[in-house]
Image (cartoon, rainbow, N blue to C red; front, side, top):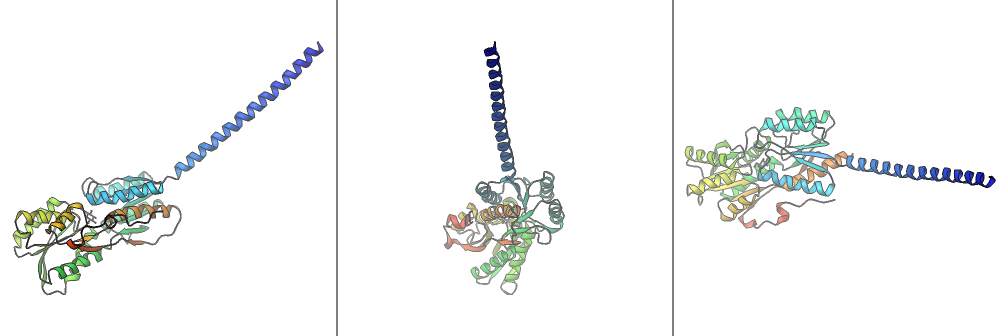
Amino acid sequence: MVNYRKWLLLSGVSLFFISVSLSVYFGLKALQYDNKLTQLESSSKQTYHFVLIPEEMDNDYWRLVEEGAREAEKDLNVTLEYSGPVQADIEEHIKKIDMAIASKVDGIITQGLNENQFKPMINKAIAKGIPVITIDTDAPNSKRIAYVGTDNYLSGFLAGQALIKDTKGKAVVGIITGHFAAEHQRLRVQGFRDAVKNEPGIKIVAIEESNITRIEAAEKAGKILAEHPEVTAFYGTSALDAIGIAQVVERMGIAEDMYIIGFDTLPETLELLKKGTIEATVVQKPYEMGYKAVQLMLDIKNGKTISPVHHTETRVIHKEDLPLKQESLQRSVSRP
Ligand code: BGC
């Protein structure tokens, strides 16, 4: 009987210890799991969500900007959304910025196409605590944190100087520009005008808009040639303009005598440069702009102070400069 009681007591005590140990063990496991979950949650919170809003989604130039930004997305472990108007459209573009604000992204990278329309929306984002970096085209009077891109006035000025040199100071010029209302296009035209203004042998006789499409660039070049048959040179200020102009002058059989200076180094432009239909083009660094903008946005999120203006390289190239090194086409960016 006594033995039976002892046995009962012993079993009771053992059971008690076993159950206490088990509760402690599983309690600790649960705690570890909880900690892991919190770690996971906080690491996914650190993945910032940035949006890059281009002027036109499928434009070859903007795809290069996207490529650079995507490379930075991988290198810096952030999430990048690329979303803009299907076809260049200022209202649609501004709506996209508004949508990004509404979905509380961590940062907005966008063109500042024209200050009047873009400034209020950029300032709205800033007021809601969302940093904005302008890319390709600045809106310096808005509250944007920084600008990454070409010094657009300088690039136009360089184009003007190149035209003077290449034509030995004698040319009747027609200009095809992306949009009259876009600030970077206006600056590229202004820089060009200022460079040639004291050259008595250079005359600008017409300027038309292409809406950044090669088809309209071709149409408008044809219109200029019909209205001003004395034109001997064209200046195209957005990526597809010189390509459109080249199409027309080749079709009309006047490519030999026509001087064309354009913008950017898209593969087709480089082909036409090699062929001699286009004489010169202004280099921009779209890939680098995309990469750098994402890098700077992350710096802002990490509390770093960044300078407001980050100009990427711009220069004029001719046939003799070909082939361009891959490096010079895109990646002269510093990686972390
Ligand atoms: C400009 C871009 C523009 C593109 C159009 C480039 O030269 O920098 O702003 O969207 O041309 O093709």
